[in-house]
Each structure stands twice: as structure tokens, then as C-alpha cells.
Length: 127
Image (tube, rainbow, N blue to C red; front, side, top):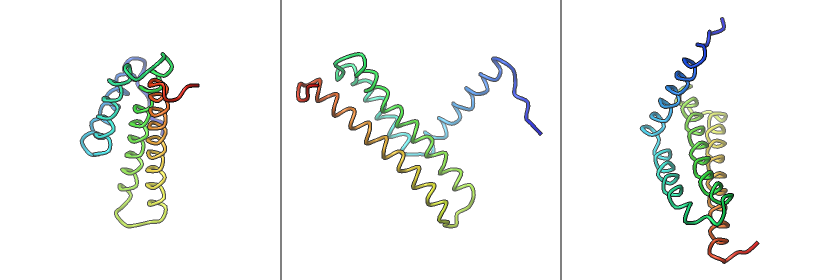
């Protein structure tokens, strides 16, 4: 049976409520989410001083928040795998490892973006 979705603003409010529950769960249960949130806040505050253009500002702010987003998704995958059961299974391990690798790639991309744009700002790298 298909679940009826509430109409209009009620649906938006419920979606917002579920999103806030997700943030709360991630923050209270996952150290990595807390660490990446602090990192995103610090880098966002530093971005206006590091940026040399509007585009670089957008990139410097966007990258750490995308990293946090990927960490939240990774935490969701881990929660689903853990819900299935505590026994070790090759597919469960693979799912967790793939999620972790996504976070690693985002962290590398964030670091790369910051290094290149900050180097450009400091005159160490000119395009």
C-alpha cells in the first residue's frame, strides 16, 4: 500500500523536521560528523580572507560542507549495515569501506581546493 504524503507546506515542514532529526542523530552519535562540522564552520569563517574572487569564495565555502554531507551519508550507510546485525559479512564490510572511501575522496578534494586557491591568493601559484 502506498503511503499518502501530506500536502504542501505540511510536507515541507515534516521534511524539515526529519532533516533536523538527522542532524541531531549525526551530531550526537558520530564523532566524525562533529569534527567535520567544526571544520566546515572554521573554514567557512576563514574563506572570505582566503578567497581571491567570488568563484574561489564559493568553492572554499562549498567544499567543507559537501564533505560534511558525504560524512552524513556514510553515517547513514553504517547505521543501516549495523541495523542488519553485528556479524561480519563481506558485503557489509564492503558497504562501510565504500562509504569511508567517499569521505576520504571528499576530504582530499577539499584539501586540494584549499591548497590551490590559497596558494593562488598568496601569489605562490598563478594561473
